[in-house]
Image 1 (cartoon, helix red, strand yellow):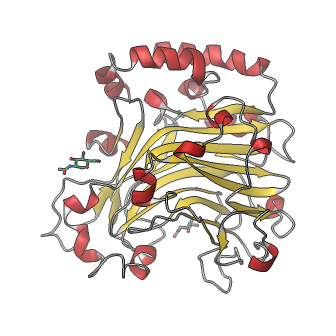
Image 2: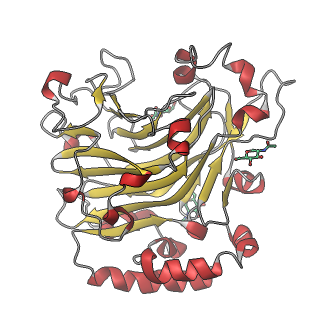
Length: 372
Ligand SMILES: *[C@@H]1O[C@H](CO)[C@@H](O)[C@H](O)[C@H]1NC(C)=O
Ligand SMILES: *[C@@H]1O[C@H](CO)[C@@H](O)[C@H](O)[C@H]1NC(C)=O
Ligand SMILES: *[C@@H]1O[C@H](CO)[C@@H](O)[C@H](O)[C@H]1NC(C)=O
């Protein structure tokens, strides 16, 4: 841990000399991936599902969170416990919230090799403000069961909408508009303003078979834009420390500020990665892709062999020229990031850290497991 801390410190100096519009504010990768998260344990707080989220200590001990030989973060649902004899069985899983928050003027990029899927499985990569729904929720990855098209959504207080489908040309976004009222109490219930990804490689088995890909979310004065890039089409600068989304193609989903004033409906967001099982969303979409009753699957561990994320990195960038309040990189991450937090701010992963990690990781795998 000490040697990585020193790399982090070196990286902070590198950051200050960078001239790019975006600079790295938070980096979750490799051995430090799990350092700056809070694990929410117990049953799911927002759905009556069949999950039992574990504490950080339990998740580490049970192997639900780990770093693999490739240096990728694994976040999984338990697939070894037989719960068939227990009518109240909750399958062990993970719900982790970032300690640092994401504010306006930020770009978030996650590159994953695979994401959880399977009948009854409900994973999500999303963000929420402290006072839900008044501080908003941004869903970057969310779908259920055997679906292969991802869905994007916002959940807000009343007054935030996505433009109607006939005012959402292909030049604005490539996704399909399913619903336009982002309000949690709106006409479409709490499904928010849903956009469906046109690519069958954007979720589930399709995503995995294609080698995964990258998701990016840009929140600035123009609104909230989300991109999905299949593995072969990830922009070359996405994995660098100076990504420039102004050179990227049309986003998959775009929530323009003209119909949703993000300064009013969104506060600082905590990033969430979780894997739920059954509950409202999978159950209401269970058939025809899955058969029988969702709860009948929960006790059988082999149903969860694909219920895991393998993430190569998750990064948050901030723009000094971004909009309004709390956009400086220090200001966003500082309040909740102390001490070892600096180790997760790696400004030059493509150079010194990668070289170090490549050489060191395979040899100190055992040590890293303990250090987590
Ligand atoms: C993140 O917060 C959790 C508690 O909520 C704490 O255990 C952990 O040490 C924090 N991580 C960092 C890097 O501050
Ligand atoms: C989840 O439920 C809790 C308490 O029931 C509530 O405070 C919180 O705002 C809810 N969050 C979401 C995202 O639904
Ligand atoms: C559990 O799933 C993992 C993949 O995450 C797989 O490698 C492993 O073999 C599975 N365990 C069992 C007991 O089938």
